[in-house]
Length: 109
Image (tube, rainbow, N blue to C red; front, top):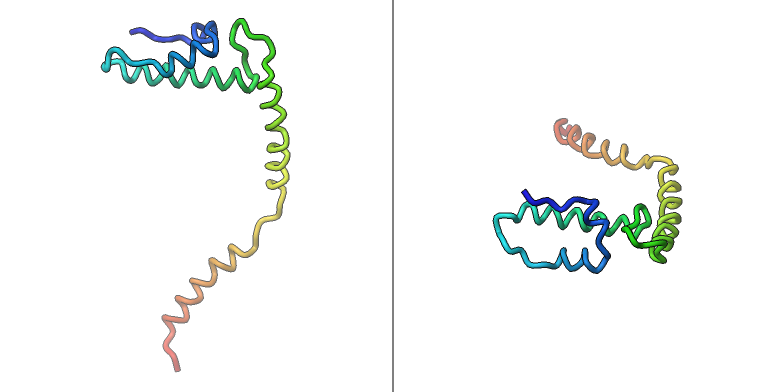
């Protein structure tokens, strides 16, 4: 079983990884393995670009700092939304169908 380990991928450059992802599969029997290798390579590229983990031979990347800075406002906005009070309309909407059913069951005088 030929497996592309994460450490081996981290030793590659970004261009080498992208070429491997786009590469042609020689043996169709290995589709499952190749699909997992591609997922592993894409994960490592995302880690590199977001600054979580660097590829070997790469120092600080300008993209990594920008990606982290871009996420910070999104986190603050998400936290602000979580603090909002729950809507009271939902209980009123749930009651309306029940009351309509009750009214339909009761005979009219």
